[in-house]
Structures are given as structure tokens and as C-alpha cells.
Length: 189
Figure (cartoon, rainbow, N blue to C red):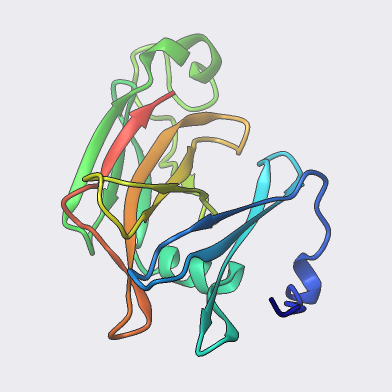
């Protein structure tokens, strides 16, 4: 029955419809506070925090910069190939997927591909390092994991090709988030 004031990072304190949820990520007797701060923009940018109370002290176990750092280490590449194919790969995860973008032929022809489906110039897309995060139970037990949905963008952010979906769990021993590499997949747009 105590009050605690938990300041958000000053750069990320503006949001238009923030929400929070109490979820157990650490397998302790208490629940953590997950804060969601949508700040908008063309990418529907949202910042996330997970705050825990270890020994009755508020402690960030996830903040926007921390999670972006974890995402960047995965080294995603989005590479356009001939015949309206796009390769999405992560060398760190040793996984790749090939997307078929032939449904966008009318949009891409003349700018990305020629009339025979050959690339006009080498081209890469990108993966957004600030994913949308959702608390999720995979096997019905605690603790929860974080489902991270990263947008896959083609020629621009508006040219969304799909999502990379990853699952992260918090480890109390190392006080860090670790990736479940067996649960990496791509959803097409």
C-alpha cells in the first residue's frame, strides 16, 4: 500500500492512447507492469516498458532503447531478387524466408523490376527494429513471453511486405531477454 512514481524516459513520455497491463514475466510472486505508449507516425511507432519491483524497488527490465538494441543484433536483411521474390534472412538465427511479391507487379514494374521480372538495380528493403510487443502465454503456464512483430518494409515503410514474429522470454538469472530461436516465422501481408 505504498505509492511509487516511476518516471518514463524523457524522450518517450508523449503518447496519445497509453495503456498498461499487469503480467508475470519473471516467474516471481509479483506481476510486472507493461506500459504501451503509442506515439504515432507513419509506422505506428510504439514504445514499451516492462517494470518490475525487485525488493520493493521499481526496476526497468525493458525500455525502448534496450529492446531496439536486442532487435538490431539479429541482423535482418531484406533483399529483392529476380522473378518478384524477396529474401528475408537473419544470419544470426540461420533462418531465411522467400516472399513472393508478384501480386505487386503493377506497382514494381518499371521501378524495381523490368517487364521480364528482372531487377532493374540491386535493391534492399528493411526490417523495423521497433516491433509491436504483446504479452503472450505459449504453453499456458507462467511466466509470459513477449511476442514481437517486426514490420518488413520494401521500397518504403508504406510498402509493407509482412511481419517477422519472434518470441522473447526474460531470464532472472542473467536479468536479460533471450530469444526463442525455434519460434521465428514470417507472416505475409
